[in-house]
Image 1 (cartoon, helix red, strand yellow):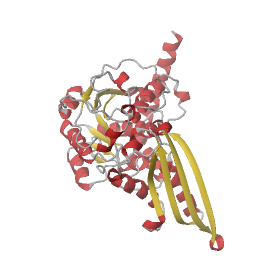
Image 2: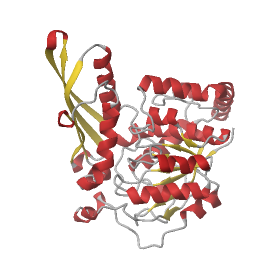
Image 3: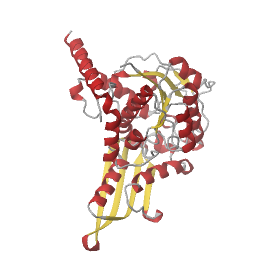
Image 4: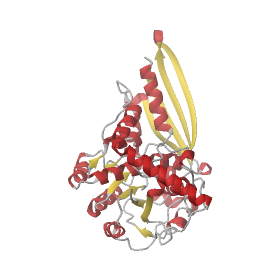
Length: 382
């Protein structure tokens, strides 16, 4: 199998975790892949992902090598693999559009975005010149115009698109048709963390349904200290995010809750939390005999590595679709890794669908993984 040539827009905490993770899993034996949902997908291992282009608008990142940019402010995620090589990939100036909320100028520079004065590059031209296979969107929440701009750039350049943000592309019929007509795969929308607030909330709602328990009221409140939470203090930027998170939970119920009985969404920005996210989950339900029960849950996660565990699978399945000439929304991996996919499925069903999608590549995958493992072990022995 060849490389997956990846382009990324938004060199923030999520990008930092993804890049660190690619290098981390490239330097361990495949028996030690704790934290990955899949080590090999259709012959593609983590070390087959090669970043070839990067776009951002922050003056502390634009013009730098990708290695240095992912460790620049205002990034604040955990460094679990800081010993990275220079990638030889310069972060290019992207298009600001609505990517920076006006309220962020009121906060310290180390916590917010600082737009560079550089002229934006021609994104589609850059994608073509580097031969990118896939463009991953890590723009801030509320970047509606900017996300659509980069989605169109992906189409113009002939790349697949993995939309990790809650702007509806894969789940929008018009955008879905555009990608389908160009035979380009799109995965989206809004990344669902490996083990985060949404997946836990969905699992508990499904468990209640399966056990004959009626969910009556619920809320999910989240706090964090990264730029995502700071950005989301501007409530107007949260419309798509709230829809995405709420529908992800409502879809687990046979009968959706009335709007006044469900509240899901970010709650507040707590700077000292940095990239740590706290989820406070409350569920009220009725069991046998119409007797009430209450559930309270507190979940603490490092937000960006949690999302990278899903993104690395979405990227590789998107490449498989490219290899096969499949265009349009990929409903299987979207349902598995995204909060607002084109079609919602139970998480166990979505997992089985993804496995079926990659099944014909299993022999290639196993051979590639075994060969790669032998090569790494041989290199270590030398």
